Image (cartoon, rainbow, N blue to C red; front, side):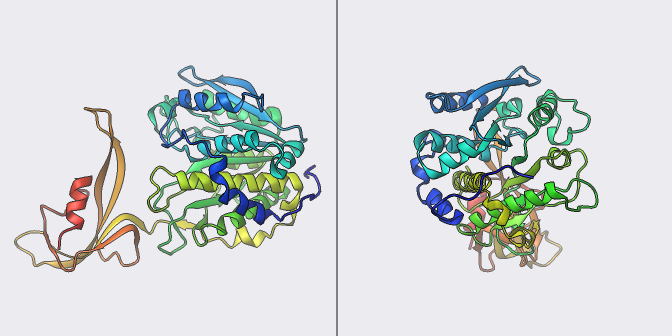
Length: 401
């Protein structure tokens, strides 16, 4: 199927992945410090990266609110690879990584990875497919549509742009880049799923053809790179066929597609470490495509991944005693709390707001932070299901002894 070149390199793929990981600060873009940014920010970061005409910029159309959505094209190879990110406006981890990858090519033009990729591949990048959503840092488009459920009806201009790009360029390979809930875990464990991968199904049978098998081999390369740095924190995304989704349909339309979902990591709310993993994983995968080594990838590396589940909270307060009201005795409980970002309507600042999402035996669940309060007594007004808490209230609750 692929026209990729035969292997021609002095180091194996995983040694290159280690080099990319260890040397990340030499090509990461230091100005990017938050996962919340707009298209205007993106364009500012892109401008210096193209000072030497590293890539061509082709406008593909405009969003519902009139923002131009562009394709970045680089490389002189024959194997086309389409990478699209931020079709959900608040899923920006891979967008940051794509910028780092471009900076790698710019700063290291003579590196074996750069030369191999740009000589063998024709890279087609759409780094921000939903700029209206990014403006608000929200999942959906300005028309309130989840464009990843618009691959068939094509009601949104953003969906039409993506399908037109796939149909026009007919890439052999694709990377569908997303963020997932940071509280997903690997299988039935308490281990956070930091990266989830999927070679999407192309129909309800979830069978394999040459298109999906090639995607699974590329996913195996990505998994192998990740297991070197976050062993036990890689899962498989749900492979149920979603007839409205782009990943499933792009696979169906003949592009071997890998879904990459960026999850969570302790202390990494801005996803800077996960951004690094994305950059390393994508560069390693692109290099394997360029050299053809992906064809020898062990499918079991991907196939044996556990599916992601949700056995994680942000905070668990362990061994509390709760007296719900004056008529009932106290019982021993764990308290599960999740923290989410909200924009304060009065001052426009982003704040962390807690919510009590579970009370009881949470022994099978893990958390980014666990606190043992050693039989401290709480009362109903303090602890109730769905109760909202400020970040300070969460801290106070966790410190009660």
